[in-house]
Image 1 (cartoon, rainbow, N blue to C red):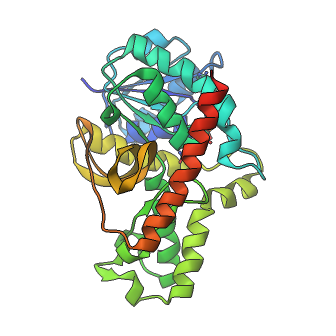
Image 2 (cartoon, rainbow, N blue to C red):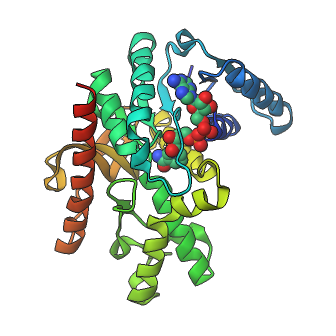
Length: 311
Ligand code: NAD
């Protein structure tokens, strides 16, 4: 029996639950939220859609962490979102306390679970979950690169007026303005993107992808994007639960790969039933590598700031 628990029944959490149910990726989904009634209400509402959408996944909403026992996968989406003008890093200290409490409950009730962290700033929060849980690094990973890459693919498809399904691309680095799109590795039905667009257009689309989350925050005024973040999280969940071994950019713990150590940051990995089964090391140019190192430097500082704060 496959069971997924999703912590946080807000926009990202509830949408993730609905996608998981519609795809019947799990037999059971437990949705947990600190606000009394919120997770129960959303789970009940979603479960009733099963009569129309024809899914049989059992959905439970609760504020009681003991219900997450025996989950193969826990997805953490609980926490504050940024408001217009805020960076993801502005959420660091408040979300760290929320994440800590949640992680201790995961350790207590479902210590065998793989954990996908979505809460921002995701690279630092994933590091924090890994530290607090004491779980092996391959069982704790963060969602960012799949979302950032989906945005990049969408912008490329729009520009070329082709199906987004034809685009394959990858974005590395932290989930912030320092992320590193790799146009050299982007293709359109196998054709290198660099043969279809000039450098100025590629740079414009890369920049829009880097600022893609902020663009939506400005439009929404309250809250941040959630449909594509949920979709990205479910792609990772599917690769893990079905042992699909997809190669996806995820925030993972690096121990020397790309010359980076002791932080979580986005790189391509193979995702399977054991979590992060392999970290893929691409041959980066000097400029790509220095951009990745610049991104890593920011997250190292954020981890340092978090560690000092929690002493
Ligand atoms: P939201 O406000 O809609 O939902 C957050 C939910 O968390 C709320 O329902 C709240 O009650 C709940 N919560 C707060 N503290 C909790 C606790 N201690 N235990 C259980 N539940 C708790 O926000 P959202 O749009 O769903 O976003 C959630 C988080 O995901 C934010 O930090 C956001 O920045 C982040 N996010 C990350 C990505 C990414 O790519 N990594 C993308 C989008 C959003």
